[in-house]
Amino acid sequence: MVAQREPIWLGYARRPIRVAHEGLAKTPAELICSVTTCGSTYSPGKYERHEFNSSGWYDTPELAARDAGDAPDHASFAYALHPLVWGPDGCSVTTGQDFLLQGRGVPQVLPRAGYELIGYDVIVASPVHGLGCSPLSCNVMADEHPVNRYCLIDTWDDAVAAAAAFGRDSPEPGPFVIVGVFMSSAVVSWPRELRPERLLLRRWGPEARAPFAALNAAPRVVERDPKAVGAQVGAASAAGAS
Image 1: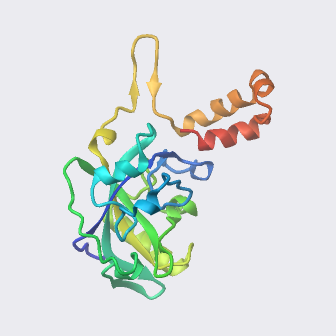
Image 2: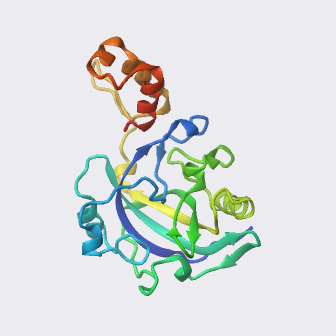
Image 3: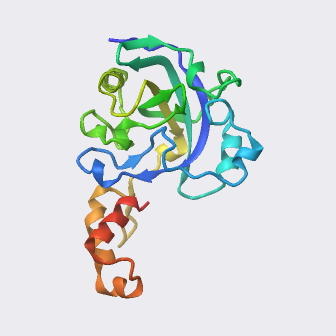
């Protein structure tokens, strides 16, 4: 099995925590905490300020927070690139320079206390487009590889197996790298549910999709919101709710 190498810390980000979509319903994934920026939105002026480093992330959590603002559905993340790359010919060593923003060098980011590893993502690392899609969430390859509730892989060996499979089978145009995903310990330690008297407060999960779809399909809801027509619309809303 491929041994780990000293990772390159790419930087910090403050990003939304997305609910796992319907395509992941048969997996343990409840949330999507992928490295991929597919579908992401950015604060006005991000590119004018140009405070991000060559990975597209930030050297400090404070800079990351300035870009994202104080949106309540956002959490603080950090990313560490393992300098190995997988393609059709197997695994090779990389400095990361080939798929980072040209001319800016490899980030010199220092890890901070207060972040916990929540899993590994396997993502596209294109010399043309940089760090890109995660087949685990974008291509629903989580059906074929063991993922946790964050739609990430728990162990290094399983991440290597996924990277080798993606390099061989090309669910997206590769090559592929493994990135360790870290989340603020304050968020990781949130309880999954609270039970004060006569009330249950819990995180959103796949088991809530069907009742949420039924709620959106109720006649009184449809009467007030004509766009919410039928259970199909309700199900689509549930898949994207947070």
